[in-house]
Amino acid sequence: MSDSCVPLLTADDLLRIAPPRNGAAPCPACAALVCAGWESVPGSFERNNLRRIGSLRRPGGEEPMLEEHHPHGTNGWSADAPIAPVFFPYNRCTVWQCVRCTRVFLRYTEYGGYYQEERIRELAPELVTDAAQ
Ligand SMILES: [Zn+2]
Image 1 (tube, rainbow, N blue to C red):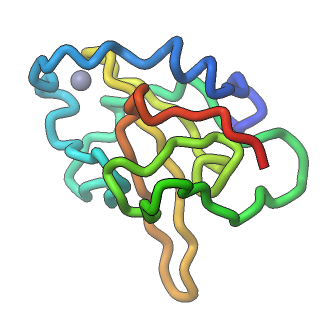
Image 2 (cartoon, rainbow, N blue to C red):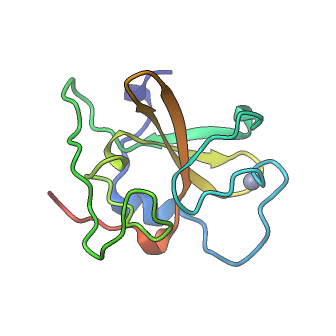
Image 3 (cartoon, rainbow, N blue to C red):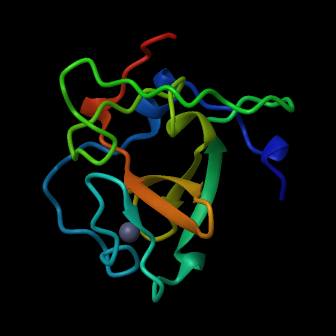
């Protein structure tokens, strides 16, 4: 399935699909994903436990911009960094939901010089912002 086959989601959409944070423990299928900030997807994680429900990447050939959005002194790894779909790395993320419970995650692949790494972050609705470029 290519990215063009999944719906393009906005900040409003993320707020709509994000489950309420009710303090419930994660279900067994996604409990291995502890990722308030960006983390590597654990190698042992069963990827079939997540299904793709959308994308934040706009269709078209252009590479999304690399600028990040940190108006309050956070950095890319902060657990409280804003989730701004227009900005890096959210602008290249796909959106996934646990097949057993309603937790939602963002994923993208980081391409380094000699490596690539799959990263994942839980969708925290209170951090979503529709900040524009
Ligand atoms: Zn789950």
